Length: 118
Image 1 (tube, helix red, strand yellow):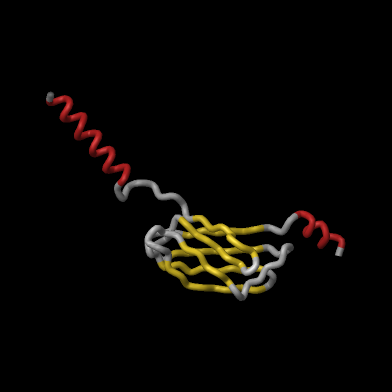
Image 2 (tube, helix red, strand yellow):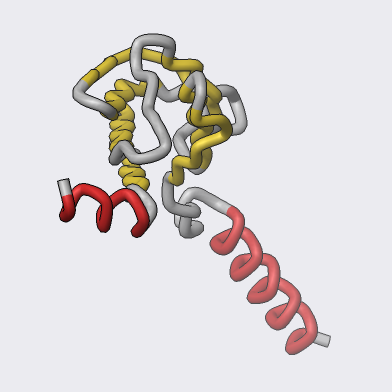
């Protein structure tokens, strides 16, 4: 009987450690939802974390400050950055609580080959 109690307590402690603050978090991620106008979604940030997001494409740069939802996600529309199909897109999101993510979308190979002949 005593052995069953020790095993039960051990299982509860292991479960609490796995779900508590010591659990590993998924890394912060960015993805492009739409290219025109540039819309970026983020996930894996801390709940309600303040985030500085900088996007650049086609020689234009835009920086916005946003706050993640209670689930650690956000979605932002960047109106000043209007990439074309052949532009490199770079987005960096840095949260005040330490989460960060970088997204880079390279131009398609046809655009790179075209630039080599120009």
